[in-house]
Image 1 (cartoon, protein in one colour):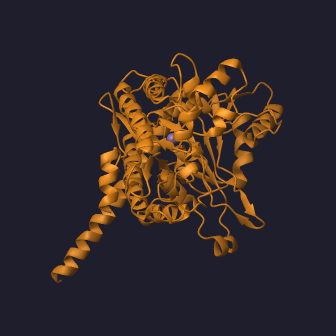
Image 2: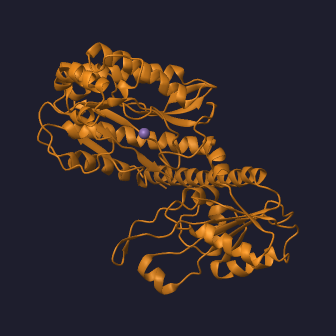
Length: 470
Ligand SMILES: [Mn+2]
């Protein structure tokens, strides 16, 4: 065998081993997640968790399928029409997966469907049945057949029925069981998933780091493409190309590419404006890698150079983020990080003359959201908001300032507000339509917030140097 072929072969073997090791690591992780959940569930319960429904885009075309986050978290199965049942009190078999029967015609149109063996392999759940056996299985379990303990509770996952009166399918199914089996109770255990998902496993942390790495490359690419006269959608396309090219599933949330006045809209998703010389561009975008997403925002001048007014605002937001990071140590809360960013932003706004006092809520005219949320399978991941920071938690720090004339115009017409408007209006005219957000993603590591969204220019100097040399 010649050298080139030998190298090629050993490279292939290394890849194969890496992917086998990766699959094994994922399976170990899934197993650990189910074990932890079983410890939290009542031993007298039966958990029934459903996959996400398919959703119609238009006519006979569906949206790309997205698995339910909690379902994926427990099973790793991405296929619709799947159900998992957990029996924590059972001595022998505790985990059961149900998948749709295979169908040759559907597979010809839509592609491969998992066999029960494949579903067992992916999930690590040894007992896999077809969904047509689900109702009789549940009936047998609840009537005491094929089970080693008494079930008093059916555990479901929300969201609970809202004010609209629409009952989610998981609740409707459980209600039906309660009618058929007197004495059975229902409990929504969504918050148990919040508890588990709050602490990222080593495997999840690795996927988050990969999401951040790809997203950083995409942000740098966006900075290269953004120029006066280029359209917002062209920056978006350049970034999302990188997501796909690097093996991400796609975006973790719809990309926000907001230039000029659009930057003052928090979730501007249209991307239809042509950028002008002198604009700031706010880009909030990150990749979904293997069902984990970071959350990253940069704001930069499309012509490569901040104006003094843009710099005034930018430096306040940057300082707020830097000070927020210092607060993010073991035992602190997201609320405490937010409070620090509020304090820094208040001081900065007062100095610029955009607010007249720091005691009240004036600052919230311009800083209209809080600084931090959990990230994970969902970009705004579930988990107790007041939890004290501990290793393995992943979150953002993202202060922002958005100067909109409408923010002043829409204040309640109280005498205090009239006075406030009168005092700040000329300064607002100077900073009008500037929107700045700086957002990074962090994982608590050794008691400190470690940024994983590294390698994207962040300070004024870094951004201007990058734009000059692009
Ligand atoms: Mn965010």
